[in-house]
Image 1 (cartoon, rainbow, N blue to C red):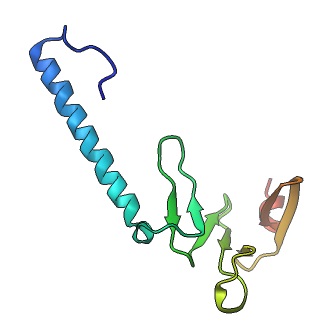
Image 2 (cartoon, rainbow, N blue to C red; image 1 turned 90 degrees about the vertical axis):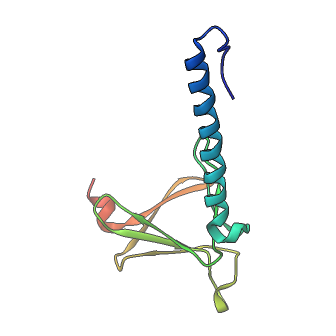
Length: 121
């Protein structure tokens, strides 16, 4: 795991680097176990993309993800649509009782907010 040659360093420094590398390995393994604990380690249709070196996390199938906008309003996204909440052909977006606004950004992208959050700019 070391990024360079440590053989020319004092013995105490070599030992310290070795201890730190072992501890880093333990922390990475612990993190992997924690992430595997989400949704009992099962893959679901709801994935939170990891950023940089963080792994992806699969949320339980009927999770709702809530985004809190700068003005405190909330926009929630669910993937449990249709009869008996198991139709995974589309998502369900809901605001906190304010009028939803959809703004096309590109042919494959759109922005969602509330009327109040759009006019707060």
